[in-house]
Image (tube, rainbow, N blue to C red):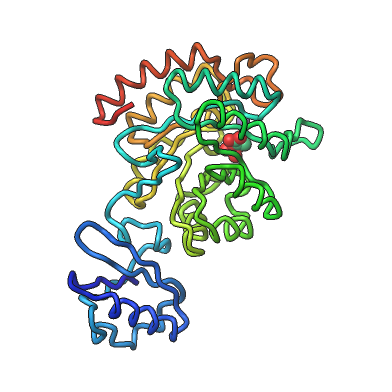
Length: 337
Ligand code: PEP
Ligand code: MN
């Protein structure tokens, strides 16, 4: 349910409404828009059906939200959310390109790739320190040391960093070292992890699960937002289909669909979506044309020796050429790069 406030509603009237909701066992999420301030009611709001909320001073109207995801929905917030990560605005007119290795490896390699992607126009550095691998015998990531390498790369390049968390017990570490916490596809429905990252303000990049529907994806984002964290971005990274020619099938239709159903920024990961380096460029262009707010691209200076996902990683020279092409597509769809 949404409570739309009168333009002239005073602070004490707003406090009174929030107190009233709290007495009824409900939480409030205030959203200040350009035209109107609204209060999102969080919790089982069926209790409100018999409450004359419009009698409260400052209330203009009370509207039901029909979507099962409430805070995530465009019904709740009409304006697109823009998330500020160290001055990089995600969800604004300017596209955001996050690039870097699948896994953080050696320090010099990480810093070197960071400098190269920055020189080509990337504004966020990606790199996994904790890797969710299918096989227990595959490289599992450098852990805490990997996060330290990302911190060093940020120090040298100024690029904010995004890295994946696997365990709720690592939250303090990620709050300290990462600028964006990534929840990977395999953990999209790890509800304890979603609730944990929801308890802070730290921006979260939530990836779509391997076989998750749009509904399940948005409800996972709702888990995070219902805990208080409003800085959530959605990442389409391909889904499992019957097709075996590539690793996953990039669901391009998800981009405009998510943008219509939700106010959150939509990022596309063409690397995991295809699993093939030569498909990364065409799918990146398609994603921008379809309305993505940004891309998450795996770049490695020596893909054949990469410890993780070398087959889908592009070299810095290819990344540079792709960025030049993306500029043209961005212009055609009224975005900037
Ligand atoms: C990743 O981005 O490093 C990753 C593991 O991706 P996904 O969770 O989409 O498989
Ligand atoms: Mn990878």
